[in-house]
Length: 91
Image (cartoon, rainbow, N blue to C red; front, top):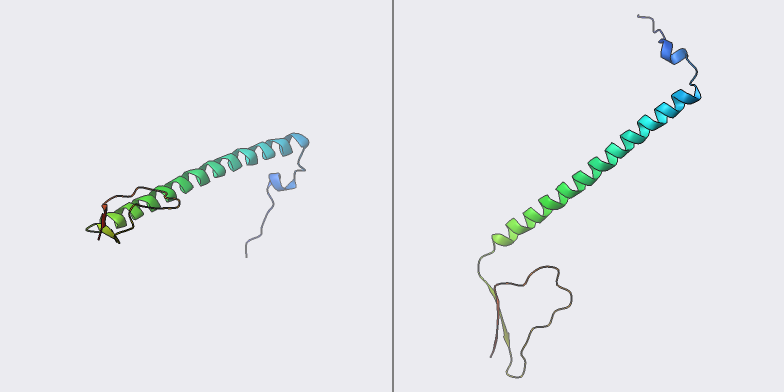
């Protein structure tokens, strides 16, 4: 079995300057991780948008809404996106 030896770095006591250097390195790494998270989040959002657009594009035809003689118009709460391929007509 091989003997495990401690390196010189393991024996040293961290000085305030070394602790500060290490903290700064960790801060830079944290900034990099946060930037990576932001980019990955944007990439996920874009890929989800593309998947929705692809699924919506595969739908063929249009939607027809028929009202009774006294009713007409279009009422919607909150629409986050467009309304297309929809026609309205009375009975």
